[in-house]
Image 1 (tube, rainbow, N blue to C red):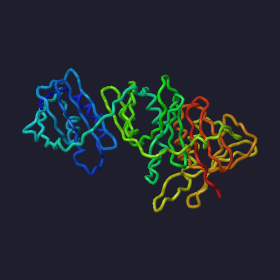
Image 2 (image 1 turned 90 degrees about the vertical axis):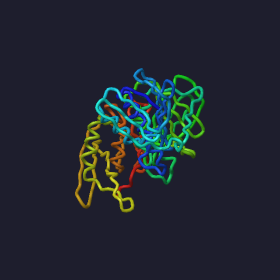
Image 3 (image 1 turned 135 degrees about the vertical axis):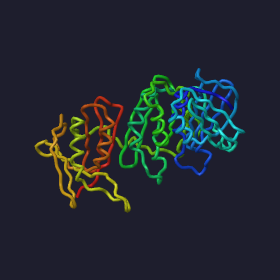
Image 4 (image 1 turned 45 degrees about the vertical axis):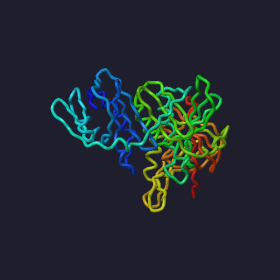
Length: 380
């Protein structure tokens, strides 16, 4: 294998490929990047079993003198290409055991891994893909992934459920204590489906999409989903099992609704939660920042917290609107509320209440497709 290529072109593709490299793996071969030079193209592949990425380079700067295949140590290879400042780089194999990297000012030799040990990665490419914009996909990921579970006790909740019905794509994430749901109306008709994508895969996809304005094609198989954009194949496994039915959790109407300026509410909750008590999970302290919201008789809104070890905090916040004649005291996680608020881009947000032990729903009139739900915490 002998080829040369523009350094920046190669680095852009290596940065994409890096999303498929494992942090830890029982299979050392997967820490490598599979490189294959054909007559006209250079293929780069990485995989951590759950996630596989492949790019096809057909750039005019690519000159292939001899075809071949090799597996290079991923981290070291990327670091070298990132650090060299040569415009063009030439690669060649020495007895199929060493990769020689030649730049304007030096050369580097990397010991190769046996490409025969690299597992076969079959990318799913079927007919009639579902197509969405990269911007819409990034928005869906931003609005859902944070609400997935980090516990493996119920693996299906570690992913985001994508459900297509009546030409509307509904994406749902929940960790049993909160829920985030967003919807996207599609222009073309597709067969209905329900799949659950691991949150870690969506995190990596979001980074890979970056600021791309490309269309993204989604190809489905029984247990895999392929995202195809630009010269990239980005494939993830799907989670097994049936996602819980969450449709009944969100009420159709609310007896109490309070509207706030989003930034003012965020700042007030952040200040009060500084003194809030933390929950204990086994021996580990988890910062859920429990706070209380009270709608008083005079229709003022008070946010407060009580911490026996540190002190107390309370603030009065003026709502922009108040659609209720009732009073209410309710406790919930400040962290969950802040996560929900930061998903919304509207200036004005709404908190809907159905009682002290009923879920709080967070949304905005300008973003009807997005709904957040937070379970309350009993206050003594």
